[in-house]
Length: 121
Image (tube, rainbow, N blue to C red; front, side, top):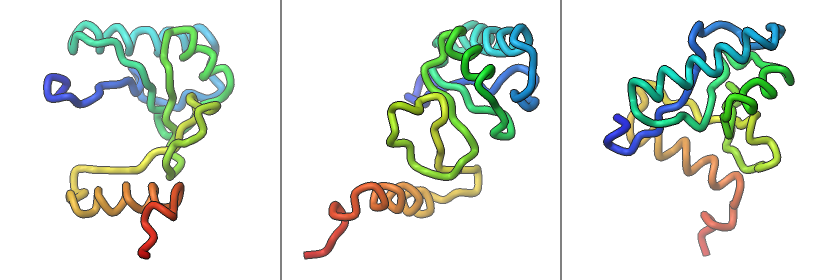
C-alpha cells in the first residue's frame, strides 16, 4: 500500500485508550509503534490516530516528543485548523464505503468549508 502512495501511520502498539496513562508508557507506545512501521514499511509515520479517540495533554506531549506531526481524533469533520494538528477530526471510511460514498463524504465537507465553491450561478 505504501508503494502505491498510501500514507501508513500509527495507531499505537497495544491499541488501548491513550488518556490517563503514565508518561513513560505513552512514550513507549509512541516510539515502539513508530519503530515498527519504520522497520516493516520503510517509512517514518508522521501522524497518529488515537485508539477509541481517547487522549489527553500528556498523550499529545508524548507523541510530539516521539516525532509525530499530527494526531487524528474520532471527531467527525474536515481538518482546517492548523493550530490543532494534534487534534484533527477525520472523515470515516471503512471497507464497505463505496467510491460514490467517499466522494460524497469529501465534497460535503469541502462545501461546508467553502460553500461558494459549490454554488450554482
